[in-house]
Image 1 (cartoon, rainbow, N blue to C red):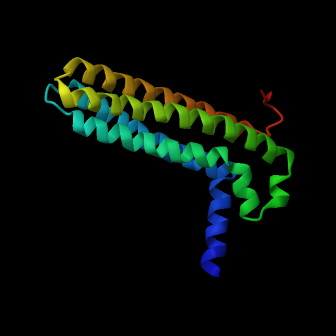
Image 2 (cartoon, rainbow, N blue to C red):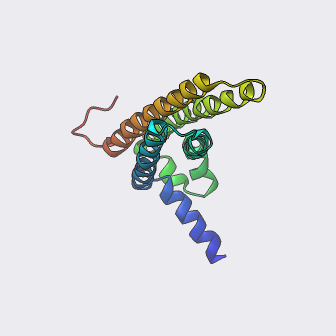
Image 3 (cartoon, rainbow, N blue to C red):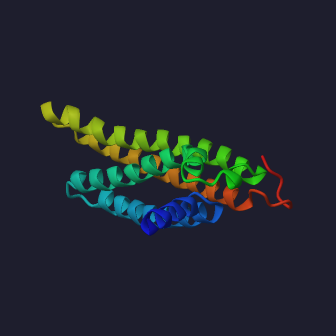
Length: 168
């Protein structure tokens, strides 16, 4: 029973304002290191498509999962029994912000996965080195775009409820 209560607390904390900021920073650091690895693999003349594909899919999976969780932040609070917290004006703003950014993460991350998978289909029938390179570059560009979205989301979450900052 204690483990269940601790699990609920952990979920509520992860979806809290401070929890989202901390988790965003962790994802940001992991993604920056991954993006730098992608760029170095792309610059290497060896055929590193498998490694690049693995990194792109890993980043995309993280953002898809996080996007889904963010989209359902309000539901998570309801399920884990924090109705009072979920009803406040600050939490309502955070719910809307999390939903919007969660959807953006989900869609962009799915496109990262699509760029990765597009390479595999024609590659079965014919050699497509230029397609591979363009899809890798597209995947890297979308990953960098997700990082920009993550940065924006983190700033907005940090300033939500701050009376000195105009809310948009």
